[in-house]
Image (cartoon, rainbow, N blue to C red; front, side):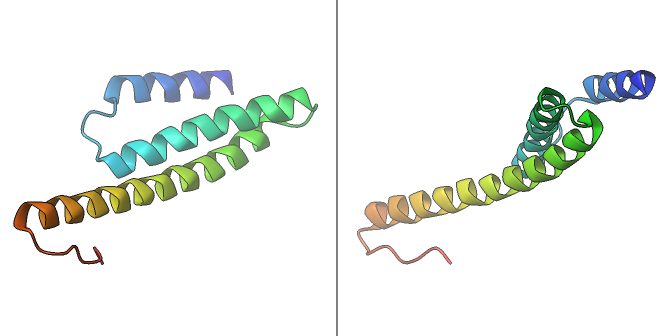
Length: 95
């Protein structure tokens, strides 16, 4: 099992995240943080760290994706207000 984890970590380190979109980066980051937190949490409470990592990764990835949607909505609202101020017209909802 340790060999699989080491190979996976080495592969991710080599490939990097430079060509990912913001959505992909936030989803992967959330998954990694969730997996770490889940593994540590279950180890502290004498559970199976593998299942904790799997559950944590799923929750973390979903949270990262939702956070990305929130940040995109914020940017859309900002741009709508900025453009309204620039043109002198009232802002409309960015739907």
